[in-house]
Length: 245
Image (cartoon, rainbow, N blue to C red; front, top):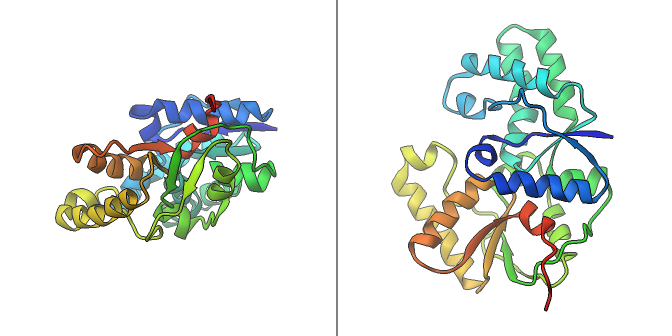
């Protein structure tokens, strides 16, 4: 099994530890992980802001980079959602049916990390240890586009020493939404305030999610309030083998 890491723009530019953690978890489970150096942005932000024609080149590049592999894994429900739900559509709208077929094939082999671990590898206990009180925020794309359901929670429940506490209003958006947070700052901030209030009500030490984008938004708000609650990606918890002493 040859698995390609689709690291995503945010992990590449801002949160490299998330990419490293994803590789660490997969290699611990005996997976041969390859990093295709030709990968770039998947084009989600272009499509979502009204530039699908400009995204076509990115879709073509993505397909070329990942087509040779058995599976593609990314630490992001958002980017995997784009690959599955936008790439073939972008290619078809550009009149390139051959690319659309290739994009659909790659999309069918592309998984968010928790999906790959549970559905493909059939693993819930990845050998992790994280002795902290944690609450989990299910990001919108993982919840509504990918429908990962409780897979991240099943993985977290098998982490040794982790005290998992339920997040009130867990299915409510944190208010990020990419450019939404910039174009609708007041609404975004109000949604963030609700999410932070619910996180703080759990008295968790860390808030976990499967997307760095949402964690950046929530973590930024928590940091500005000096709450001491830290944002931690699911991959980082699953990669941890910290002492329980």
